[in-house]
Length: 113
Length: 114
Image 1 (spheres, chains in turn red, cyan):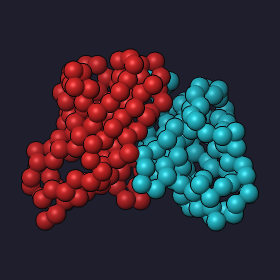
Image 2 (image 1 turned 60 degrees about the vertical axis):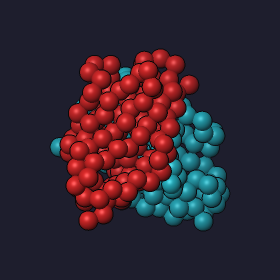
Image 3 (image 1 turned 135 degrees about the vertical axis):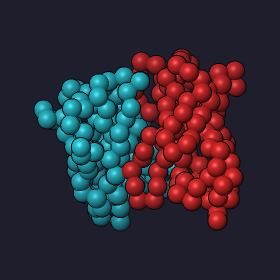
Image 4 (image 1 turned 180 degrees about the vertical axis):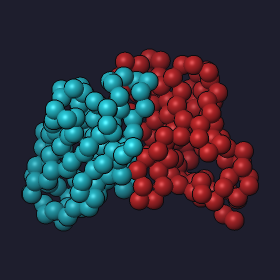
């Protein structure tokens, strides 16, 4: 069975400082991993995905994530936070051969001026 | 291009009633999935349909059912509503069926059961 643990329910940063959202996963097989963002009253938007190619994945809006198999982690980072980054972020896993997504509980990113 | 559309946007129902939610996938997408997002939680998988056949089912009671039509649109039905069914119901579409294909989400239907 696959599962995802997002280690922080809330992360607060100041505008212009780095962002780190932590995610650990559990999967029996080679997983695909995703980060989605959900702005208030909006649908989910895909930020980036890992599907067994390069372990460092670049996404939209300056976000990137690194797949570390030895640590079963897929942390999301951004060098410099922007006010518009304030939203809820979900780490998601999908096992090879299956396309159902298993979501973490989410991390709310708060960005202060 | 139009994204995934869902209707209605909001819905208020009473316990015991039945509800039908609708989803139209992105043009050309043949796979539709449904997710339930309870307040403060991540979305949970309910169903996946591909080419009008059920390809996956999450851990939800039989009160939940779905179907996909020849034009690939989909309906989610929930019978005998409970207060705990109050949630945001999300529909996602993707090209074919498989792990590497991105799922594109609609804005959701907010269901409130009173």
